[in-house]
Image (tube, rainbow, N blue to C red; front, side):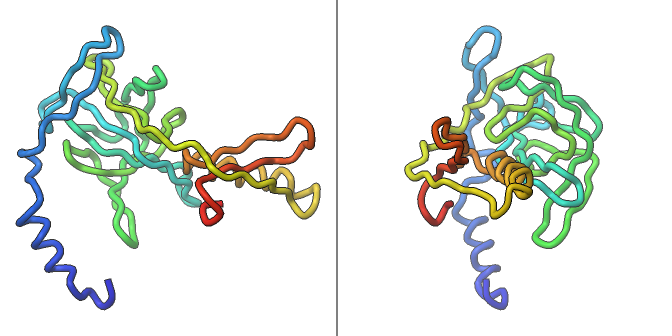
Length: 197
């Protein structure tokens, strides 16, 4: 907002008109082993369940995985189970993100949003949970690309740099796709429109 005008009114309206966290029904998921539907109420004493909703590459700390905790508590340094990929992950550090800074925190509670450092296999839409009480939350569906363009570096020496940069972009944005055309050998980038590309 320009000069912080209206921010307090907006925050007051959120408190007055939006539902309280206790009014929101528990999130539904499925048991990966039995495929039975299970629920996870927003409760710190419940089993841990979270959804990774964004991946970002940071020049200082590497890959950041943003996630929202639906139930339970997570401490930094602990291990979690990625039920989408069937892999164990170790949470290196947990960061609370602010507009212009990051704050390292020791634990995160249900309803909170934070970023984890050190996750190797987790991508956008993956469920992170307790291995003893595994659940699979509703996966995100991403639209199919509608436009494609061929991209090429200015020089052959820049080919590797371009590949690394496009790889990072594709990892951060699941609606962006890349492949190599077998006939022409060109790198084809597909997305949601000209502005997206």
